[in-house]
Image 1 (cartoon, helix red, strand yellow):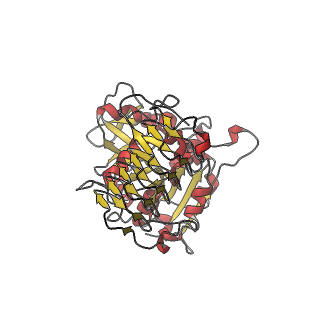
Image 2 (image 1 turned 45 degrees about the vertical axis):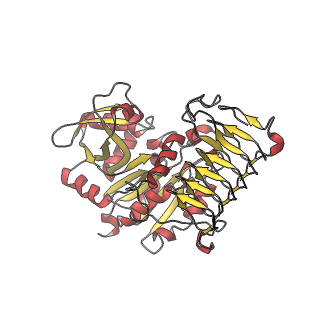
Image 3 (image 1 turned 60 degrees about the horizontal axis):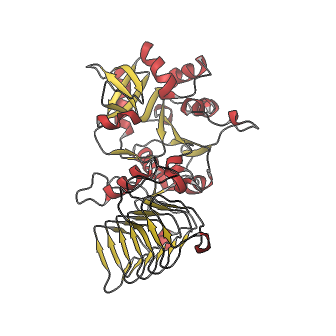
Length: 421
């Protein structure tokens, strides 16, 4: 296909992502590390690349620097060249909060000039914070075959989860005849994946009709279903929104299963490192005599002297003798010193757990985090970037240790479950 015959891609990467708590205190949600070598946004960008699409606009807003650094010129995904490109699209900011993106539809509306400068028959709109593999060519063919104004990627989810999504009732032809946005009582188990193909002319008309409407799922999609051709594209593979601590941890653990549904390497996901990470320059992981590793992913540059069970370690992690890491996600260049224990925890970059300290002790269901009970409630303890856990400290379950916390900031070496330091 010629460029004008391929959909133009708009990738939404601007949400606050507050449910990821301290992991997004210093970065945009799509820039959070995943499965050792990747960032969350690598999955959407690689899917775009593997589908042969060549023009991408990335709409970013909150703490965009790490994301902009990571994407760069788009070269790792082959988005450089005369007919290829990726462009960062920040809000047209002014002096008021109202100048920022107010929703998905508003973000696209603020970038109509980008759409018009890249002629295309369709617009493919994606989110930057989902883990999945998808062939957008197949979805585009479905859209054209149906003569659709809008096609929404949709999949069946457990009824217990449907309240988190837009839900669509379809007829025998896959046309959506009814829509519920995050329903408390759902009529269907068919959930929106936040992946849309719009006919370009139709989208521009829709955005121009009522400039007060700011969100696709809440405002524009229900209106379009009432009067126009909106279809559900059925998806049957692995897909997960990793916008919560629990979902993020579970998706990382999914990579470790004996027969994983998720396989970044087999999916053709490109691991990309920025200049300060230098993944490619790191030596292979080193396993010292006496170390034990079971059911885990260990990245380059790591040195393992202790025991690792069912955990994901990013590049450069050091684990000392007698130390134990279990059911945990350890991001770049953390140091787990001799005799320390990290159990059911997520550690952000460059954290040091001093000798004989314990991160994650007690009954996982004992108490939710007191400040953020909806973020941490299954026992996971979260440690922010560059924090230092003191020697002999014992940190309970569902705790939060904020970024850059030092031993002097701990009121006691005993941090009870549910507490925040």
